[in-house]
Every structure is written in structure tokens, then in C-alpha cells.
Length: 313
View 1 (cartoon, rainbow, N blue to C red):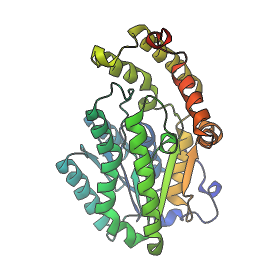
View 2 (cartoon, one colour):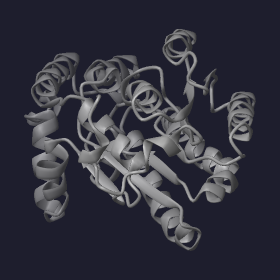
View 3 (tube, rainbow, N blue to C red):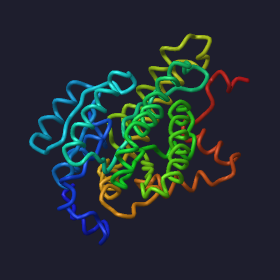
């Protein structure tokens, strides 16, 4: 990730100006957030406030970001106390450089897969809490400081934010919600010179994505029998094929991190960054098909043949 900024565009924010700019990033335990936090601090030169959920993630980032002028916070951002802990750290770092914030990167996310038939309402509540309400709460709290800098807000959604995929309704709903919120926020911030950016990755080789089908199978096995009439053999077969497909299509997460880095420094960032070939050349065109075609293709791609219980009907 040591790419020269000149490849982003000629109007990139000068490196000399970034030492006084604060970037807040959530979800820094692993994946995009972890890589972006390191890159933003060490290569781009920002003061990074990194939020982690786990103690292990916090320790790793803390050690990696020593002497960079930022801060690392371990907190559960769904909880009021955790949110306040992060906001207090952000305030302290921001006040050290004049009080403003250059960028908020709402990257933290969770996926709790499972078909609508058996995934319980609690899965939707938790998913919406992390994937939607946390970004809303952070944006609400930090917006005055971002406006002061004429900075930017970057919301990481997914291809699931513009096309709903089978087996993942809770995640789909949360990402669609964040996309709609981002569109409204972008329009309302136009007079203030604040950019609102949406990053829409396809499947990347991150811990969250690569564990998807294991989590889906567990949700099936944990459900009551009256909710799962399809048979365990069917579910195990779907999961096995799903894992194979993930291995085949998962892209290097640095593709997404590179796009996020560009969005941090470019004076005129794109409104949306679709990252990965699958996002640009498969899922986006798929989303434009008539729904009766789209539905059949996505169901066949996800589940293959009908479950035995339905095949006999």
C-alpha cells in the first residue's frame, strides 16, 4: 500500500497538510479498517483515531500506530458508554489540531446470515445496530467538527447495498439503509462543502467474508426443526458449494483499501466506489435486470437445486 498519491489525481490533498488532519476509522480489528488505519497513518500522514471491538485488535493497532499522534480505542460502539469513549478520544485528538475532523470512515460491520425463514428478529436488530445505527450516531455527533474542516464522511456498504442477495436479508437491509442515508446526507451537506462517499465492495478476502457460509450453516443448524424442513444434508451441500464459490471470487482487500485511501486524499472524491471486478462487471449489471430474471439467477447461484422437501412436491 505504499502507492504514490500522484496516481490518485493531481489535486490530491498535499502530504504536508495531512499532519494536522484527523481521520476517524471504525472496525479496525481486521480487514479494510485495520489496513486503512495503518496506511492512513504511516503512508498518508494523517492523525488516525482507530476504533476496535476486541482487546486483541486494540493492542495490535496500538503497537502499530505508536508515535503517530492519533489514538486507539477499544469499545463496543452499540453501547452508549462505548460510543462516548470513542467520542472523548476523538475530541482530545481533534482539539490538539484546532478542533476539526477531516474524515469519518464508518467501516465497522457485522454479517449474521441466514434465510428469512429461520434467521430470528434478534439478528436483524444486532445487524442494524452495528451496520446502520452506529454510523448514524457517529455522524450525528461528529458532523459539526467535519463541517468545520469541509471534510468527508465515508460509509462502507457493499454490493448488498444496491442488490439484495438470497440468504442475507439482515445484512442487505442494513446496507440498503446506509446507502439511502448516505444519499440524503450527501445532498444536505452540499452547501457546507462536505463530501459523502459510499464504498461498495464485492466479496473480498477478509475474515468477515470468508466465514460467511460457516455462519450461514450454523444459523440453519441452530434453528428449530419446524423452521428448517429442508434437511441437514441440503444445508451442508449449499454451504460447501458456497465456500468453493467464495474461494473462486474473493478479491484482494487492498483493492478496496486503495479506493478508500484515494477517497481520503482526493479533493473531489467519487460519490460511489465500486471495488472489485465482481462489483463493477457482475453485480451492478445484474441489478439492472428485470426482477424475474434477476431472482432466478441469484437463487440458482446461491442454492443450486431445490431442497429435497420441495423437489418432492
